[in-house]
Length: 155
Image 1 (cartoon, rainbow, N blue to C red):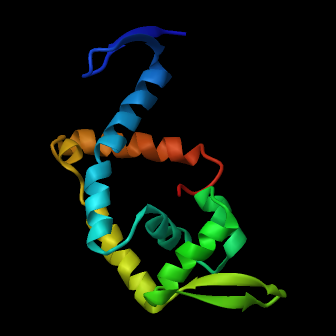
Image 2 (cartoon, rainbow, N blue to C red; image 1 turned 135 degrees about the vertical axis):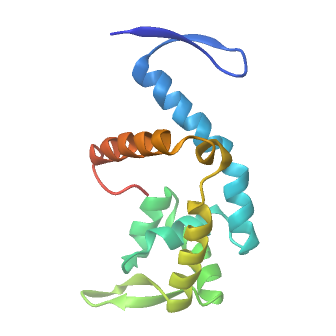
């Protein structure tokens, strides 16, 4: 296994294998964009769990599954759902197989909002936009291959 010595912009030196260095750089890039991401979702009066819930609800989903996707307690999902329902972004309906189970369904308004925000967030940030088209294409292709190795869709 090849070991490289990486120096972060914060001056920390660490011996890392290529995979670790790559993963660390990818995380640093993504986390550097958190303020931009937060600014966009806050413009729509959402907080991170609300946005993640909207992204997760491609199809009707039991509230318990949303809790797992958000890594939170069912009571937190109730609070999140209440806020989204008050805004007309989701509805709760009984599951056909078990009326005790509540399915969360994205409304037309919720889908439109999700598409609008997704479009804004899809605009490349300066570190990506500043790369050449060739580098952007290469990065895209490598990331597609990496995602193909995951167990399921990215969330």
